[in-house]
Image (cartoon, rainbow, N blue to C red):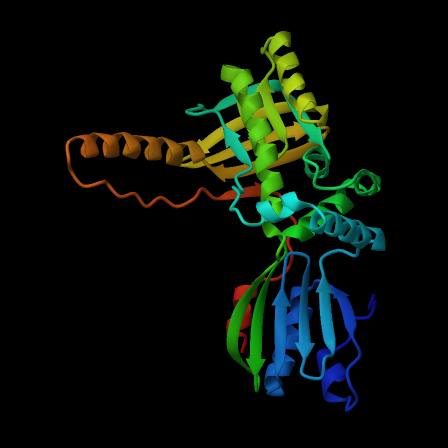
Length: 332
């Protein structure tokens, strides 16, 4: 790991030898400095930007890499074990042929702004790793390896399956073309998301009017729900092979700003804020259009067309990766 922020001018301009590979933590200003220098030199180079890393590869093969976090080798070993298990599994080849939903949040339809001193929060432990093991995609020793990782290591070990990189190719210091590389295992990760979402939806159905919202692998419920219904939710999760835990959530508040839902709470002593568009509005609209289509078709008229964008999701606070790839195109 490079500890001193080497000047891009020093490294490139004053060295006639092949530039050695360099690694830095992701830093916007330092990255832009490198790009500007290479543009001024009218160099040929490629920028590759993904969730965890951003790299600049020079014509001679030298690489400058900017990483979001430095992970222990065991994270990459675990990822390799997962991929090896997948490639040996016939089910993998069926999964990658299909498109899987990436929706991983939801809320009560038509919910009004509300405040609760305390709510019930049930979180699935190691949701994606458990889903892979419970559905037979990985072997027991791989699952145990994933379980030995810390939470902030396990997510990238799994998240690398959804690898996607944006490429910006420069020729003589000017942008020549762009490309998008998508990893072969991306749909596997989306399959895991979809499986966990289906579990959350089953829990939501049981909770009924007591359901507030869910986020990825955690469901939030009004604490006046009966013990019997909570027990039913536990049974659903257990039947799917999930272990779960109860988290302490207080000072829960939900607000609406037009179509935007803002939820704040204190979870285990830490302030949390979630922001997302009300996906129910889109679903309700689709159902309405579907009814109208059925009516029009019944009457022999043309089908009504719909064009509705997918709901966006944003959680705050979210770690800033420090790089806006759109600026690569117009750095001067």
